[in-house]
Image 1 (cartoon, rainbow, N blue to C red):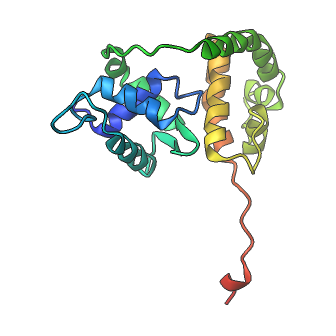
Image 2 (image 1 turned 90 degrees about the horizontal axis):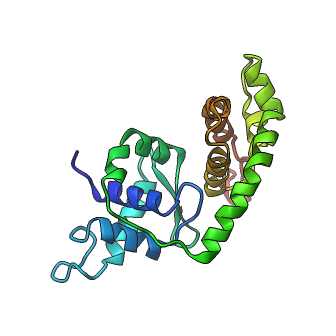
Image 3 (image 1 turned 90 degrees about the vertical axis):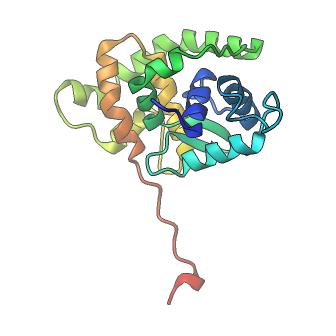
Length: 204
């Protein structure tokens, strides 16, 4: 499979824990350049990172019909559910890279905290109304699914993606929860933001 620049930034985000964290553009640039220095380096000096090419690749992927990433230069970048699914389908691409990303002490501490939180997250999932409905063979409504991840109509798109991904990571290794989350996450992401009232200028 021939990789595009947009594919590479998706793989780079995955290597940086982009499913559960918003990653700064410069960090994505370093990771993408390590994966494909010719594509993301200067024309004559490929050892130098072309930050503008990385920004463009990130922006174009976000604007794709089935975007694999979300975010911005200001808020950072993260993988969408579609991006996570693409990586699962093309896992060999990520596994064949030699990219190693050093984790900061702060990041290490955070992941230890998330490990301790895993048990409470599993308990909360299994006691939720959405899980009980799913276990009984009933449909999981959008609103009930959103409550599982503490998402409401005003939660920004990027925060929705990160919240659902973090819960899925905390619940990993639990077969029943994996099946439940495969239903609940898409349902929760369908929750619509409130429609903005028309201004006087918009009124005919």
